[in-house]
Length: 144
Length: 144
Image (cartoon, rainbow over all chains, first blue to last red; front, side, top):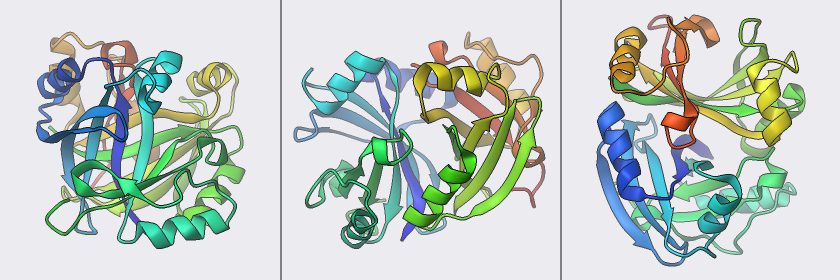
C-alpha cells in the first residue's frame, strides 16, 4: 500500500547550482547526496517534511552523469523540470506485482537500488497519464 | 517558511477517468473536488499522507474547463503530466514577498484562492529550473 509522497524527482543540468537555488530561495538543505551509477545520475535529496507513516518527503535533484542515461535523454528532450514522482510503500515487491497484474507496465522485472539504499521500481508514464511514477521502499526505519 | 510538500498538480484531459485510474491502481480516494472558475479548472484532491507540520500532502488532478485557461494551454503544448508542485507554508504572503525580493518572479501581486479555500501564488518556472512552483497556505487547521 502506498502511504506517502516519497519524493519529487527534478532533472537539472547543474546539480550544485540547483542545490544552491533551493537553499537560497526556500532554505531547503541537502539531507543526502550520492552518485547512482546504475541510474546514471548524481543526486541530492532535500528533506522537506516528515510523513504520517513514519517516513519523509524529499525533493530529489538529479543531474545526469552520462548523456545516454534515462535522465540525460529526458533532459535533452524536455529541458529541466519535474522528471518523476515517487510514492513510498513498505513493500515495493508486492505493490509493484499487484499493479503489474492490473495491466500497468512496470519497468523493472525486480526492484533496483535507489537513493539511500532504498528499493525502487518505475511505472510506464504512458500507462499513468503522462506521469513517470516511481515506487519506493526505504532501506530501513533509520533511512527515511 | 515552507514546511511541506502540499501537493503535486497533475494536468489531465478527463478528470473522471484520471480519478478512476488513481483509485483502481493505487487505492487513492477523492478527498475533495471543486471547480475553480478563476483558475479555469475542475479538480480533485487525493489525500496521500499527513505531514509533520499538521498539514497533508495531496495529488491535485486538474482538468481545464476552458482551452484558454493556463492548464488548458499547458496541456495543448505538453500533453498530460505533472503541471506544478506546491509547497505549504503558514504565511504565503510573507514567504512570497521574501522570495520576490530575491529576484524570483511571483506571478500574482497578491495571493489568490486555491483548493479548499487556501491562498496560493505561483513562481515563474523559468526562475525555478523549469518547475512551476506554487506556494499554499491552507484555509485553517481543519482545511488541510
